[in-house]
Image (tube, rainbow, N blue to C red):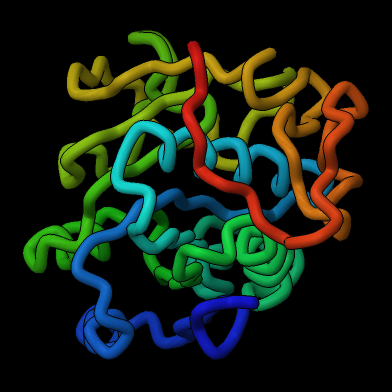
Amino acid sequence: MFRHELPYTMIESTNHEEIFARLQALKVTGAHFTNGTYAFGPEKTVATTLAGFKYVLTANDPDLPLIIAINSDTSMRLMGKTDFLNQKTRADNVLKPLAKAFPDNEVIGIFYDDKTPNDLYAFLAKNNITHTLYKWGYGTQPEVPKIEGAELFKVVYAYPLVDDLKPLCWEETPVVNQTNIKVVDLRGVLITPDRKCLFPLPESLSCYQSRDVANVENSAEVVRPGFVQL
């Protein structure tokens, strides 16, 4: 079913040169990105991840790889956040459903040891890998925390939060009025307030799909990019 050998690729080295070398081996010349700790459980992270990439793929190159950059265990300890699952488990929780939902796209997980992915993104930007970036909550208004590394991407999307749950590093992220960000409200369009997707998902991901969407796809585990009317 998947066009690559495994459902997704996890690059466990946090060395920037080694990450880039692996991306080169995968023939990645540009990608759609998001990042975070993914410290909350799948019920909080999966639907937003799927909806975020769903929109990106409707508005940009639908064939590019999907990359999630994740705070490593070293990064979590550096921030004083130690009461969470290990990095591989946090990565698996979002990479597996993402690969099931979008089997026509390469799905890749990478890790960073710093508090933010800025240095990693800067390195990848020098090699023209950073195409788009999206984040939930950050950068949506001048008075909310900024999107780290936004200046290193060609296109940046900020989605208003779907509920009152703030990201783990919300209070620690500086507030800066960023002007290169496109704010797109996906609430009621691609996701519900209780974090359910408003577009068809494969049967194995039906728990993340709203009951208002009746046509769960049973025959093939795929979500076509399609056009989203906003």
